[in-house]
Image (cartoon, rainbow, N blue to C red; front, top):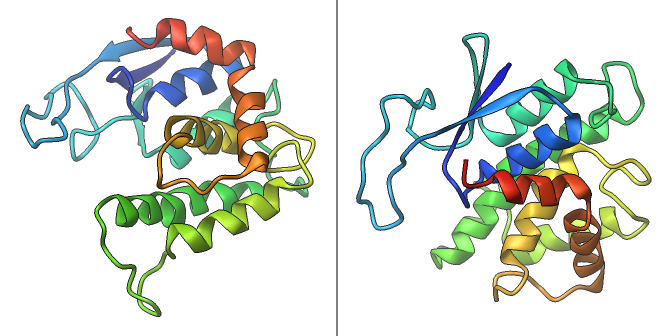
Length: 198
């Protein structure tokens, strides 16, 4: 049984979506986190080292950070083939796009949100204006990050783009708009939304 440490309407909501897609047995443990204004407190029940979400426990094995959780869960629950297995051709692209998500895209969005210039040549990420064309190029053949195959990478990217879709941080793109509609139309997404409150 997977335990998801969750705060509604946060990054951990997408893990519910992933668990529903995987048809994995899980339970939700609601936790508190610090608020955007710095208030609140770290919940002692939350195993994430910084009191953030998401984090999961699998029989006391703790996994935190969305790409690590996605990789762990798709390896553990391979039945629905949401993550290419070791030795499969798409595994390289899958791992690369999972890592690109937190290594490049999230820092790019945060830099733009905080109005901080990305240090050229020294930062491990790039500005949003450089990151998004790479993602649009990967998605253009469609319909998903790995082509015809829906994967946990789409859970990360699709839910993020759905959340930021109307934001000035997101460049306008019919490729992204169409992609988001494919992601949020999935039955598992609706089931996850219904469970988001715990």
